[in-house]
Image 1 (tube, rainbow, N blue to C red):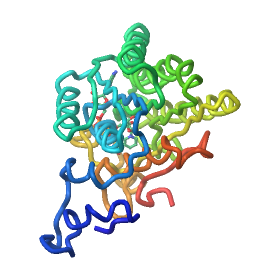
Image 2: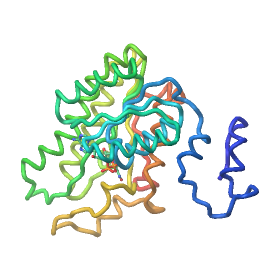
Image 3: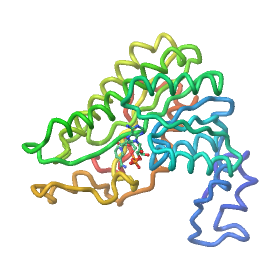
Image 4: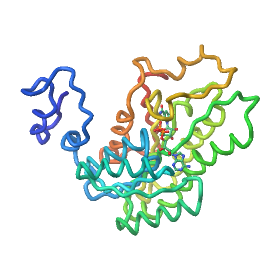
Amino acid sequence: MKCIGAGLARYTSEIDPLSPGGHAGDVFTGYQVMAGFYMKRFTGKVVLVTGAGSGIGKASALRLAAEGGLVFCVDMNPDTLDATVAEISEAAGQARAHACNISDEGEVNACITACVESYGGLDVLVNMAGILRFDDTEQLQLDHWQKVIDVNLTGTMLLCRAVLPHLVNSRGNIVNAASTAALSGLPCGVAYSATKGGVLALTRSIAVEYAKRGVRANCVCPGDINTNMTEGLDFPATMDFDLMPRISSITGPKGPEVIAGVIAMLASEDGAHITGEDVRVDGGTLS
Ligand SMILES: NC(=O)c1ccc[n+]([C@@H]2O[C@H](COP(=O)([O-])OP(=O)(O)OC[C@H]3O[C@@H](n4cnc5c(N)ncnc54)[C@H](O)[C@@H]3O)[C@@H](O)[C@H]2O)c1
């Protein structure tokens, strides 16, 4: 593993497999080690992460805490949420847990109030909570369609709406979860694709509406990331698996930390001139 920047050099002996004590092929998953490795772009910044109990949301919470952020972790699953906060705390990071269903307007508003009261403000919203289901389009039931819309699209909007006054105060920013499914057809994914296209469109609208007030809004478009969402997918009998390469990366799936790093860049001052953008992180799927 290579270290970039002189300020990080003191960590190389712990993590460089070519250094004394290192071993070729070492895999460094330890958050404690990585917390020392990262820049501290979020010191003193309050970051709210939804979906923080699993996958990309969890990886983002860990990454932003490792970079010095005060992370307000939100998920509807209190058990996995507590596990994320415990992992951050064990590594001397700062995080608090707040259980919330993001599709419930009252719960979302209470969540933002709790975050601001708890940490005294809000600088960054990372909106990763979401659900995925596959349905044969002709068999798609209205309640299944509605559930995906409620969580992925309405939930994202509710969070954005509630944080905007605070982001205007802090000149903060939003990173929303879109998907390669927003950019290209997803077989048997009509509901999911529609929500992700909607997230992309609402993010661009917020970016334009709030640019002069100092607020940025961007999306990541992940593809082929190993998480609970992509494990054991339930496909309808009519699914045409010949179409699967459309959603598979050239080099195979990657872990959620590859998305977390891009989210950290967008949400940091390194992304200061990026707004209304969608950053595709899919290992070349749509290239
Ligand atoms: N994994 C991928 O390949 C991939 C690809 C494209 C886009 N995405 C998007 O990235 C985001 C994160 O996905 P992931 O793969 O980490 O999924 P995941 O299933 O691992 O994590 C999603 C988290 O969201 C939470 N959640 C679900 N509904 C919620 C609700 N109503 N309120 C609060 N929390 C809720 C879940 O409890 C879970 O912890 C999603 O928006 C997903 O659509 C993922």
